[in-house]
Length: 302
Image (cartoon, rainbow, N blue to C red; front, side, top):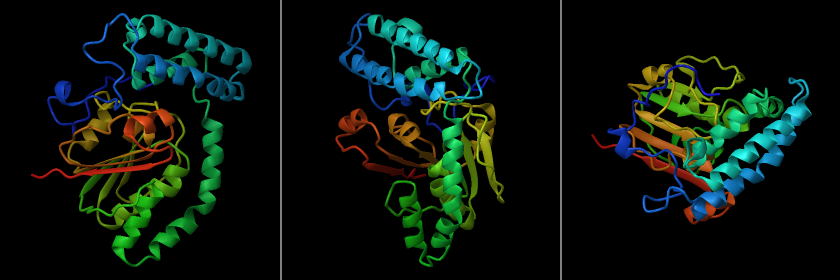
């Protein structure tokens, strides 16, 4: 689950947060909609999450760290399916109305309640192992690119984007997943370049137990307080808030953190949002195509 510590707002969000920040990019309902009836968007997205149950159940069944995994996976499937049915019948149930943050949180809650901590841990470990084989080759390729602009462009392409921008930040905060090819072959080389330019980098991982070990000068790794694929920046760990307070660049990487949530988030400092569109419903909302890459750099003028 998310951090048990008292959660606090991310200090670099523009204020007042209550009126300027909405984590979810895609609105499921509007003020004029009936609170007692699910909107067409809510029904559609509840169905998207319902279709994900089979995949999550399969991964849960293969979790050898949990006894009776198959039976517990069936319990998860039944519990989460019932919650989705309840939300479709009454959008105000289970802490609703539903949005992508709530639907992800309830899914994770159901997994934890039946005994699963991280059903994707083995997948992440396997992906890390494969990615680390290529890591030295990838960073050597970047380091051998003498032109700074071209090197930066290649690095951004490594995290699913292709534009060059000015990165004169003294301190950067990067929100990332806790493992996988995107962090090993994408974000870590990108963070190395920031360090090379004299930037202090603070990487905010999600709340899982497992993370690739990294040790580098001026590189800090901090638990964001969330273990969901999306992130609500109005609820982050106090440690993250304290260490981020004086940063002048915020980087959000990944579809969940940078597109499904926080695409329109406004910060007190410069921000960069990077991700690949992996859901057809998100592509339709954005007017793009599946697997399009999104890069959004916002400069704050003093």
